[in-house]
Length: 423
Ligand code: LLP
Image (tube, rainbow, N blue to C red; front, side, top):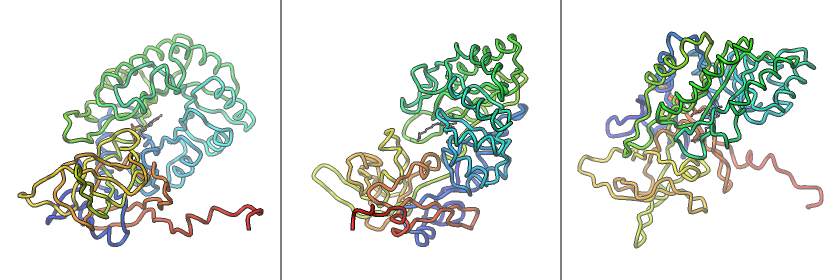
């Protein structure tokens, strides 16, 4: 459910007609709905009612500070994977004890920063990292509360590039080797090994892989407790999928179904729970709006060339992802939808948002919206082809604001300088 719907023949974000924002901000731009964000956070959190749970929004999915602030005000913590994300979470007002620092490669500087600001939990992904963390924490006179991220060797049934819990993936500690590493952690100074973390991938559309992973985690907790460990925290990661492609019949489980599965699998284990959802909170709370530059008919194709490109939304080029595309001016019921390839201006054939996508007749200057782009949209944007980073707007009821503006060309070039040997 989301709040991007037609009203008076024009696509709106809540009560704001998208052409209004386009006129002020220019295109392309992302637009987020406060009502959708709020709804998704509440639905997810209430699906976990009865558990002692903290929802730490995975800000890799959307690191816009206004988006994070909106969620923090609802009670969210943050899952961060870099020093930059940690700074952003703090700037958005997240309380440090509700911040989880995850990630397969944390630098010493990042670990220092995390310890200095007192994050609630650091998820450790290897023996080497455990040793580094112990050394740094001891030097700072701190004790790091850690969870070991285990790799449960589970096939998540999602895109190969976003599966993270198989034994050949770079993430986590092989679950069979985890007990030995906990024993090592217990012997190290500056470490409180009181948690287990797991995350098996993203855009997961069935409960079975989660259930398999959580069952392994449960077995591990039982084993660790028998070995004298006081395991008090379980971090079950993120990964719940969202519907992208309404022509497909894949329907991801609802948060309620996910919550019920969590409760029946590990609900009675006597731990505090952390969840790290990203996509399911913010995915369809955002859209990207773009303007048609021109229509190009060739003997075999109809190309709709828009002013957004793969640098603004890379998911189709990178993962073959399909995002629903709507004409912002609603097509009359009598309109004929004909297949078009929707492409951007970047000089790569993969700069294509959709092939043979059924669209009504469009002309130069028309607006189109790419739906369900709130997660892994703007955060993955780049300046490829010297295109300015795409701006972001946010709507709340009948109000909207630019929450990240488009940089000027001067700003884009300001970080560069000539070496002294070039005149
Ligand atoms: N926790 C950890 C440790 C993660 O690695 C991720 C995502 C999440 C939580 C949040 O997962 P979510 O609930 O959003 O599925 N760029 C890709 C997705 C990469 C996901 C990486 N990890 C895409 O556009 O599909």
